[in-house]
Length: 78
Image 1 (cartoon, rainbow, N blue to C red):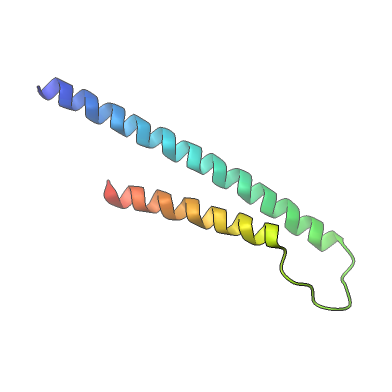
Image 2 (image 1 turned 120 degrees about the vertical axis):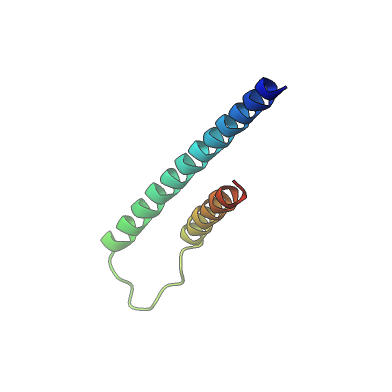
């Protein structure tokens, strides 16, 4: 019985690691898109009036925060 429990724990940990790796990959890609967007914005001529925040950029930031929150919650659950 103990071997089955240890095997189940191993696979559960492996699944958690795989899910965390995927989440980290999503975060890295989103941060790359944010970085590119910010670089594009800095290379554009500055408009005379203040422009509204870019909705796509805000969405990327929200996605990164969501992924980080999910990873933190998983870590706290153990």
